[in-house]
Length: 319
Image (cartoon, rainbow, N blue to C red):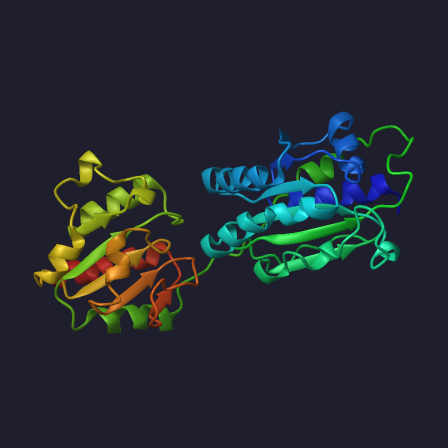
């Protein structure tokens, strides 16, 4: 497998997972990727950065904005370590990011040669998958698209092939990522009903990164007619259609006894009141793709799905 063949195979696999944006930090060792992306035909939108740390956070924003995985391309050595901060952020927000790092051949490891470190393990603590490839194909089927991954690719010289640029095949261009949607099983519906049966005054907390569209959220929140705290990350704060339902000072309302439980929709809230819940314990249910409760005590977490609103609608009608 030549360097170019490996580049095309990896990029095809990333495209199959839904990657459409590549954030590129050009360097020496990642020349096989840079050369192909500069002169070959491909379906990616390229964003060029000179700083790997800024590039990886820029990629995080792209992923959150377009709700699709984004890849960051770096050269070898300490350039890879600059992406760690963004990987930590992506890990905790469950944002799909692929760090694509170029490396020298494995035979150089431990030799002290320039631009040679054990970069294959640098990001492993916060990446759900890691690949250390040397003239080997990439298989990304295990990626759940809820966490960062690290793909380390070893290139030997000559880095750039002399053959003509690869023509992107229609077959690879038509391939799309197939994400298995989470379905609400009977036990999840039962868990929600069990949580709601003894509650009378729940407070909805809407944060960011939900799988629901804004229109879907607005429609369902209006239909439920329940008080809701709209965190800024929800992008619905002070929305005119929700002004009659919106709670602006949740901590004071909880202290006054206006609510007996919390229903969080979305990621862990950033607002101070969420941290105050550690000292104002209320029954709390999380409807989220995130695996994190955001509280020291483990609470029930169910995947976000339209079924949640259907079940909650029944509660609203009978409360």
